[in-house]
Image 1 (cartoon, one colour):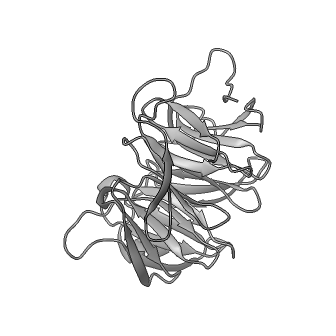
Image 2: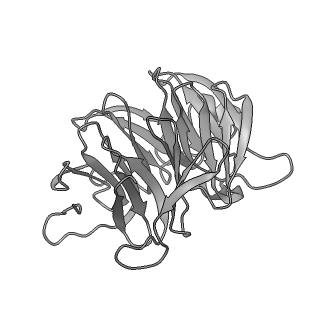
Length: 275
């Protein structure tokens, strides 16, 4: 079923989407109503964070149904309770940080995404869209700094981290969009491997089986891939208009396996049944 907004309202630029354990859908958009909740039937529930976000970029739901939003314009990451109360803010609104010292403060430079590990550790990927100082910053569940590592390439390629997730073994996966790679690290930042793709990697999620799903941006595809980057299947078609993906920016998996895709170009959320 489509997501139903109140009469007279339409989606703005839809940056991200997340689904909680009840099947409720949270849409993060670039508007005065940046975070909108829908129930498992697609009916509007409420607005959260009204008038707060500068540039919505990502929303994630943790194992306790807490809601995490990333505001790349304000350089902040915010944790909300399931009720919508602010529990934690990492970063300082409007204040840029750069380098390992700033990361300890913490201050961010254009954060793109956040991942919550099974033990509660928080991983923030910053440097979206080629901003200076691409890196991952790790905190404990209370927001205390643990570690940071740079994502810059020695050979001078431009890193553009766009999404970050962790797996059941604690490995950290960073979607490095413009070089079409998924970079895998241990939690302390030790590199494990790079997975080279043939498309840009915008959105990234892992399902219960550890299979990766990616959104490929303007290519309009949702791909299911194995640990080596081999494409096991795909869905979606690029374009403007109903049913077409203008820019698959971020994606989410529902408890029943349905796939939701945030489309910044067509200002909508696409829903696919898992094949």
